[in-house]
Amino acid sequence: MKILIMLYIVVTATVYNAVPEQTNADCLTTASLKKIDSLKHRWVAVSRDLEELGYTMGTKILVTGAGDLDGVWTVEDRMNKRWECRIDFLVNNDRIYGKWENVKITKL
Image (cartoon, rainbow, N blue to C red; front, side, top):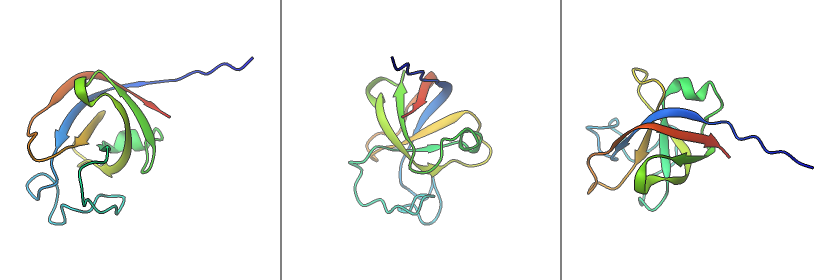
């Protein structure tokens, strides 16, 4: 018999766009050095405290509690050091706001 235990972390989730005002001057390159050429991907940025818990670049995570953004995402970016216990969904520029409390994330 195999038993699968999935641990989750509760975070605040927000959205960001690939624009200099919300990132840095090279807004089309993530912290993992991936180039953003289309927003058909499902990438998130994580706060640095989550990296210490294993939510590192390339990690696939399951997100629940963020409405239509629930599902599987890949960690490909890092948030500013001022944030803690937070993820940031990279979304198209037509979506400019979104914030959810008590979002659960699980490493896959």
